[in-house]
Image (cartoon, rainbow, N blue to C red; front, side):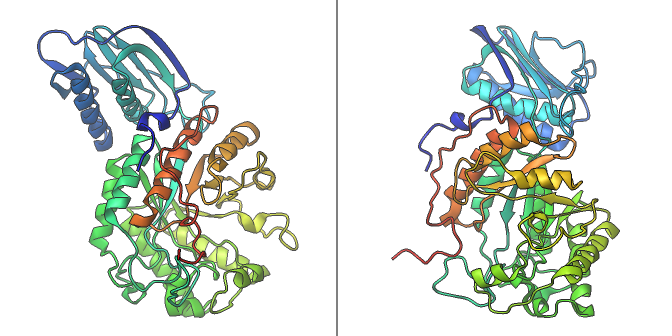
Length: 464
C-alpha cells in the first residue's frame, strides 16, 4: 500500500510560476472547449480533467469542441487562447510535439500543447493542479526524453525449461499474469506521463501460427488486441518483445533446441509476422539477444546449454532484423553484446538497429552507454529497480548530461518481475521512480510503493 500521497511522485515541471488567487468558476454552465480532431486518448484525458476541475470547483463541467480555438488547445471560463503553442527547435529530439503550457486564472484556464501529445500531457498535469486546489499559476513544460517506456512481462518463461519448487520465478506451464495488476500499472504509467509500454510476449499468447508454444491459460489473440487497445486508449504506445537469446528462450519450448535449423528460422519469422499484425504495425520490435554467453548459462543453471558465438550469433541477429524490417518495423535489442569487457572486437551489429544499454547499478557514470554511442548506435538506456531505487534517476541524469540527444531518443525502465499480485508494489515502484526521472532528470524521483527486495530477484528461494 502507498505510504505517501500520490502527489509526491508527479513528474516535476520544468517551469512553474505560482500566483495569488484560485480559479473561481463563473456563473452559468461550465464548458471545457477543445480544438477539433483530438485522438481518443486526448479526449479521454480531457474528460478526466473536466471531472476533476468540476470536483475542485464543485460544479459540473462538460467537454465540447470549438472551431475558433487554435490547434491543440483547451479553454474553460473566460480564458482565451488566440495563438497556437509552437515547439522550440532547441527541444530534444522526439519531444517537440510533447510540450505544453497551462495557465490558471481566477476566471478561467487554458491548456495549450505543441501537438496532440503535448495537449494530452498538459491535461494530465491539470489534474495535479486540481489536487492543489486550482491555484492561479502558469506552467511551461516539456519532457527531457521523447520516449519514456517500461517493460512489462506477459510471459515470464525465459531462464528455466522445467518447473522448480525451489525457484520463485522459474518456469511455469501456466500463465502468470494478473489483469488487475496490469490495469493498475498501465494506468499509473499514463497518469505519470510515460508514453510507451514494451510487452514481453513469449508464450503468453495462443498464436495462430504456433499454438503449441502457449502455456495453459494463455491469452487469445482477441484478448491481446483488447489489451493493446487499452494501452493506446491511455496514450501508451505498445511495442512487442520476444527474446531470442538462447539463454532466455525457454518460452520457445522444443524450438529452442533447434537453433540454427530451417524450422527454427521459420518459427521465428512466423511469430514476428503474427505479432507485427496483432500490434497493428508498431514502430519497433524488441528481439532481446542479451547474455548469450557461457558465463550466463552457468550462472542461471539452464537445463540445456546452446550458444551461438561470433558469426553464428551475428547471422542470427541479421536474420531476425530482416524479418522485422520485412514487416515494416525497426529492430530493437539489448546492448550488452557491445560492451568492451566481452571478448574480441564488438560484433558488427547493423547500425540501423536500436539498442538498449542496460545498467541497474547505483553508480553515477555509465561509460558503456557512451561507448555504444561512439560506435554509432542509437541507444535507449535501460534502468531498473531490481536492486537500487536510485538507478533510474542516476541513469537519466547521466544520459541527459553526457549522451547526444540525437542518439538517445528515450529511456526504458525494467523491474524483471512477473505481472502478478505478489509483485504489484515492485511494478508500481518501478513506474513511479522512472516517470519523474525520465520526464525531468533535474527533479526528484520518489515512490510511495516500497520495493520488496526479496520478491525482486527471480532466482531467490521462497521465504520460509
